[in-house]
Image (cartoon, rainbow, N blue to C red; front, side, top):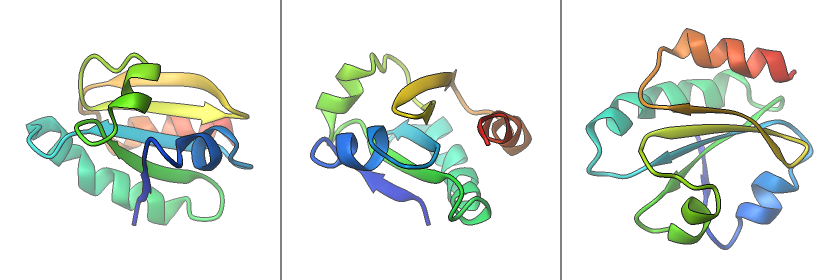
Length: 105
């Protein structure tokens, strides 16, 4: 299952993570976000121990969403060594995300 990032734990759990991180910024009311949710959960299982995959509810965690200029959801940010290396806006196929994740490993 995907990790739950919040305003309170984002710095420690995502920015300071020892492995690459995939963060799905979403909201419960967002249709495309609902489409991406099972994909994010599958990626969390597929890459367990290699990549930290998680979600940020933008309605509940406005601070981190604002810090990363999230204007549309879903937005998926890929981070490595505390730096954003890629950003994807909108629902995309799992295979595309897998390619982006594999390029960070």
